[in-house]
Image 1 (tube, rainbow, N blue to C red):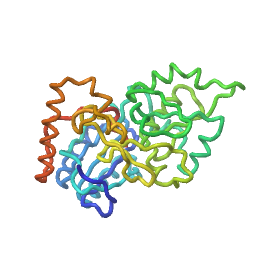
Image 2 (image 1 turned 45 degrees about the vertical axis):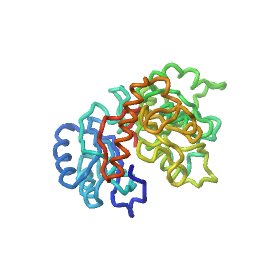
Image 3 (image 1 turned 30 degrees about the horizontal axis):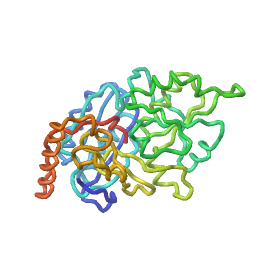
Image 4 (image 1 turned 90 degrees about the vertical axis):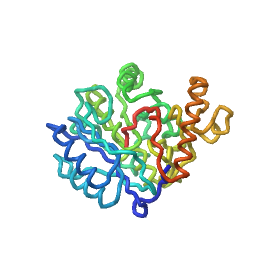
Length: 327
């Protein structure tokens, strides 16, 4: 797997981006983007929908710059926020520009995050907000992400997918928003890079919740900018790339990834007899047949051989896990 390095020193530039904006005809944007990416040796995935653009792309620095220059010419994308990182080897197999109903799937078609998202809170102001006793803090990520780390005192919805968040909130709303003095609390929400909490705050606003806030830039911006000695973050942060998890300063964390079920694997879990690299982990060992594990072993063997020979093994498509369109 490619190693994560600084964006300026790496051979490959990796750019993660999203923007909620109303595209009148997103299908008309697809072909020019695909052609430009192909011409510049860019790989990764870009998602286009009526509600905006989202994705992660990688390639040579000049090629990434050319694609971003083009994206900034799209309607209301001139100041799109981009997060840069680096890799020593290309982390993606191919380039896909795809049309979707949503750029991050929640299943609530009437939302307008471009205009109705909650109030941004800068990382340096986040501690004060979530320390306020009149604030409830909700983690909008999936259960396996929360297990790796979360903000102190945050509520874990224990949802396996972002699609489950609306149903969870509607079921828990009365309990969550109940206050002894009758005044509704402030609601602060966060996610990995910002996109899910923008949509979730728009959802709460549509549900009639007045004071809704979200962490600008997500956990990643918080870990990048807030000193560890002042941090209210506990644990590590799961990320949907080759690093698996990051800690303060966005340096690589201690987790591995189970390539059978895509669950993060801690140091302790990696020492379990149920963990076998590329084959199983304690979370999925009992859910797989021996025939499946034999197939995974062969796939892992081919991946190791390919890496030793200096190329990337395509092989079978790995299981997908959760909301991999969060950046």
